Length: 293
Image 1 (cartoon, rainbow, N blue to C red):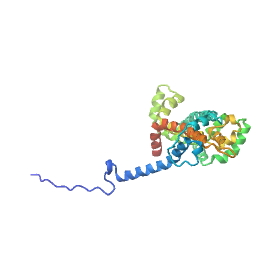
Image 2: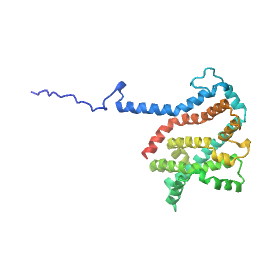
Image 3: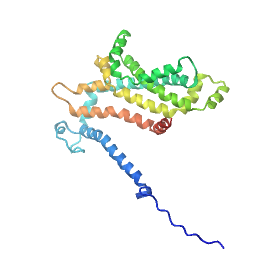
Image 4: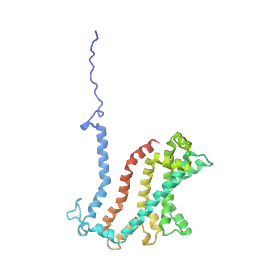
């Protein structure tokens, strides 16, 4: 006859059991910390958004987050005055062109580094990596002289080429890791169907690496959109100003149009937020996979 054995319930370790709403204490602590960091990060943005709706007369004394007498006149003035809309279009053209050219060139280079053997392969790759340690400001004078000899000063094309060159090493480095992780059996199968190298890259490698492409595209767009020192040095004509340089027009010698300035700053952040939201679907998986690699 089998005897029933009485077992005592195990007591969970402190801090490891489920807490409120089934969330563990440690997870709650991380959640609280994440919320606090988010508030610290979003605080200046929310305050800038609040000031952009404040009337000019009440800007300096504004201490509340919600304006008492909100107005959209600052946005109308920011968009219509100081050629802001023209600067916006210039920045958009440069940023989109930089993303497209960088991703295309980096994909070709990363595919070569990931799949082919050629002389000095590792040396060339490590030279790309070494260039990441050089600050862009140290290259400002050589870049200026180079653009001058190529007759590309004061042109959006020359500015785009400089942005492409500065973003290529990081993009190649990241894409190469993703391309190497794709099984070669997939490539062999599509080559048996008569696909060439370019078709393998476009129809197989890039679609399987969309998380990485989305991540680098977002970073490239943000870096090109917000870049200021190179644009200020290379562009000397107001018709070719990008948005960061054009925002300086709102700051006068004796007075500052704070209302339109904050409104213009809010408008300038919108494209970056939109690009981030579009790429968010692939951004999470791209960051996690990159961390595993």
